[in-house]
Amino acid sequence: MSEPQFPTSLGVSTTDSIRLFGQSLPDELIGHVGFGELAYRLITLRPPTAGQARVFDAVLVALADHGFTPTAIAARLTYLSAPEALQGALAAGLLGGGSRFLGVSEDTGAFLAAALSSCAELPTDDAGWDALATEAVRERRAAGGFVPGLGHHLHKDGDPRTPVLFALARAEGEFGPHLTLFEAVGRVAPAVLGKQLPLNGAGACGAALADIGIPPALLRGVVLLARCAGLLGHLAEEIRNPIADTVFRSVESHAVYVDPDA
Image (cartoon, one colour):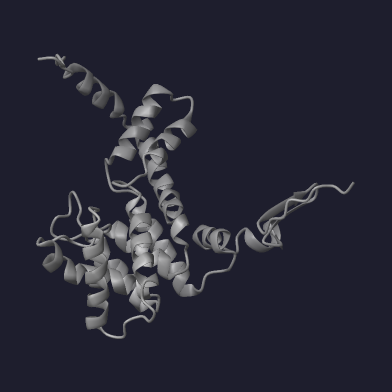
């Protein structure tokens, strides 16, 4: 009976070698590729072009940290509870990635991909893109859902990351159909929805990642990869200058019993 085989195109180790993508890790990869380039290749199984690598790195930077978000607070509070398990605090922060924080990039990418797949041919001018965006926004609104990538709880007048990501993708020749449609969504949304909502940076990141070949199902994974660095930074700061105990004691001291039958 033959031995079972478990095929992989990633890493394989023997007693005297470590190979990744069929290359020697110590001789051909360590010191020769950056982490962003490696992460892109791990996901897609192909080396990024220079433009793809720059956009990928820009997205990682854009999503790494955004202050005291719920995920950062969760990581700090978990570290307060279990300082002997740094991995638990990191995991707590990552597990908070969802529809409101850290999941917007994936939701936006999926929304744009669905709209693009609905048309036989891509539009060739702004009017065509606006029409496609209008249809997509109306369908989402009719279904009772939010349009992902629109609005921000803090940056009401515009997310400062969005124009920078747009400009970088254009400069690198990576401004593809997802970003083009996302930009059109920003143009038509006020008229369709009846209110002004800015295109947020998380949505722009999702569109940019989709344009450089990251599958929609893996977009949130890239976001979590970026946020892992930010959470590690929060935990390092928590060790140097802790605030989690103050947060805990503030909530505890202001807890008020409410009679559910009152």
